[in-house]
Image (cartoon, rainbow, N blue to C red; front, side, top):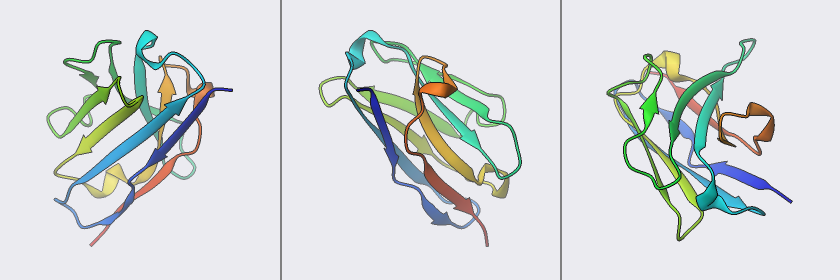
Length: 115
């Protein structure tokens, strides 16, 4: 069974940082491009970033480019999202997915940016 569990969310002030993690199991993690999505209340899901099977440089939505960094550790079957210079508009539930398939998401983690 494919399982993806995001963690590391919380409440921070504007300008703050958070590091999200996503623990993957039930499939060959290193065989898949992985992605992050987010969904704010009442909004459609928004793609945030993706990273290739071997890691390296990710690709990012314009809304987070230069502030967020995605990485992965294939030995630990874990995906990461370092979020810096957070803004109130980054408030959402964040999910990790296999490839860019939002339907594959598991448990998300809430990120709230508020003063």
